[in-house]
Image (tube, rainbow, N blue to C red; front, top):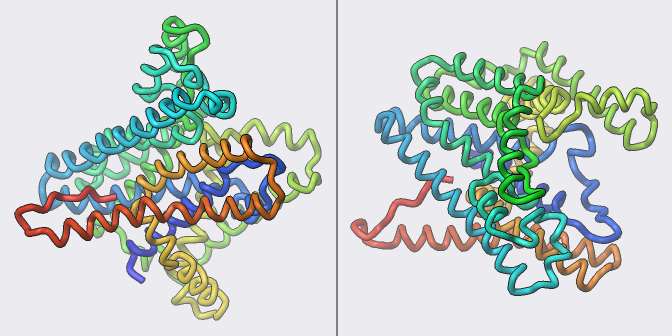
Length: 402
């Protein structure tokens, strides 16, 4: 399987589990526990953001090398504008639904914040991406990353990737030390003067989570520029870092399982929580992500060349999983699929609150139906692209890379 097909399958995997994790049913959902997130502090959003950065680095570094800085930058900024239009479409579709069907307002209230009873101030805050409904907040941060990506890709191509990496690390550390809090308080104060109670509403701190995206961007651009040889980085005989990554992975897995089954003392957990902030991508999430990411990359790249049979077998199983046509299909159109998934999640909540509670078997069937529905926007987009390819050359319009 080619490299991009594998990455598409990975993105599709993360999208499928994001859908599963975002569904809410009265009485819970058993399927949600069949999840790698139950074994540590690595979740689907981290993998999705990292792979997005990786592909931006790989695709647009190659274009920037061919077309120059402004040629590549224009394509990235066009992508950011397109995504902003997706975000606006998603936002106004939810607002229109609340206006046309008032019964949805109390159902979606906790997820929509001040937008549940929208006024001019809350709508303006949403349009400027400062106040977002639940599950839409990954779109604003992705837009922000695309806006600043072109000069960073250019720096990597010029051999200044260390500068990009250090800047990213400094921004991440600034958030961990609270340097962003005065700015956040000032923005909240401004929004509060516009409308009492209005404040920023984004789960993901854009200055902290950028370390995931920028890490992917640097590695992707280095790959495109052939400044890194992955077969050598992940050599089957080099296992010192592999052992360290496995140790960290097992530590976090045992801690997570201990917490799940009530084996962690309260005093220990209280201390652990201090460095466990998902929204700010705190140290626990960073270390667990690095360890898990290294293990996965080593297994997929070095595993097939290992002398032992067990890593070859694991690599084969993972390759088969990520090569499933459904996962590759939705992964090829990940941003469109993500926007569609927001509508489905809100729809499922409305169905549950209006007609539920449902038996466990019905909740499971609805969850599987929701996941299967992710193929709809991907299939429609591929049908549109096939139609474009059948047009005469002079009538074709360029389709943006995902």
